[in-house]
Amino acid sequence: MLKDFAISIVRTLRDRGHQAYLVGGCVRDLVLGREPADYDVATDATPDEVMRIFPETYSVGAQFGVVLVPAGDAAGYVSAEASEHARSNAVEVATFRSDVGYSDGRHPDEVRFSKDPREDVERRDFTINGLLFDPIKNQVLDFVGGRKDLDAGIIRTIGEPERRFAEDKLRMLRGLRFAARFDYRIEAKTFAAIPKMAAQIHQVSHERVRDELTRMLTEGHARRAFLLLDESGLLHEILPEISAMKGVEQPPEFHPEGDVFVHTLLLLDELPHPCTRTLAWGALLHDVGKPPTFRVAPDRIRFDGHVEVGVRMAQEILHRLRFSNDDTEQILALVANHMRFADVQKMKESTFKRFVRMPDFAEHLELHRIDCQASHGDLTSYQFTREKMAAIPPETMRPAPLITGDDLIAAGYEPGPRFKEILSAVEDAQLEGQLQGREDAMAFVRAQFPVQT
Image (cartoon, rainbow, N blue to C red; front, side, top):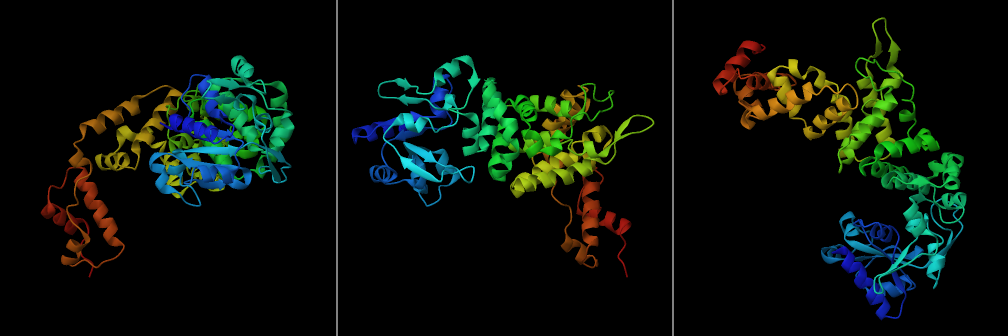
């Protein structure tokens, strides 16, 4: 258990004559009665001393006083750059320090190691993350009023908000995320600093912004997080395409809930918890193409081509935020196919089977469900899809091919682009139940696609 391992690190450091405490988010969560996702230790031991005491360590930020001590099977992954697996099975050990200057808006220009835990806490972000815990004495040390703010449900920076945010602009996003996650209010001075500094968020790397937004979307309080993003001015800075949804009306017969922004926020409120990042981003971006395609036709409001436009816009956003190719492919598929459920009851058997065979189709189905729940509430197509999928035998959903390209060559067909068209037509007929074997398939090919001479 990682908690026990973290406590053993504290005890070992104490036995070697050093100060050591659990620190940060893990203490906050323990005070709140929650299970921490990870554990951090703060100590007066220097990085070199920590690495001598614990030989198998990751020097991930020794210049800033930070090393990782691996637990259990993570010890086999020691390297110059810790793997994601290793990080999740390791305890971060940081030396007490004070920071001098933040020219790049993220890293201190100079780090001065300290022997004073109070000095270390005072350079951290928010009071609720500034608690220390002595697991040996079972005692919480609070130099910044974190216990009081936890009790009152308040997000407050340690010291002057603009100074804390200037040190690392990502803290603005983190503050909003904590407020949403814990359903806390943001202290007035702390919140007032964010709109003033919102434009400076562009100094933060796209990857760090992406990861913080993903946490907002998947931690279970996405709707409030995005309302706070909007209110603070950060939404316009980092996702102007989502901000543009505000005030874009929709046909009330399909969307009685309101405009595109309101619909998207309601949909985020319906996200399951836990939620995959691809489903969460698919939900956020599924209607991103509506604002630029809005028009009022004689019969009703229309968004002609909003899916195709939305796919292009989503691709630009995902590229900007440095998403992986795999995540990008799935999120774009969610955006591209979310309207197809409107036709699901009229699909040919082959079309339906190909549709539900898409990779991670469960996410497509879930997006359709919450899209309906956040608008008209009609789950007819959702229920139809589920019931039909359950009724189709697996062997007919993905049957083995009746013929291959070799069969076509043997029958006198010239290899080329036509093969794909022929084999696809054979599979469609097979999925429709029209063909039962190889002879049927070859007879079908000869009838529909005569050999060209």
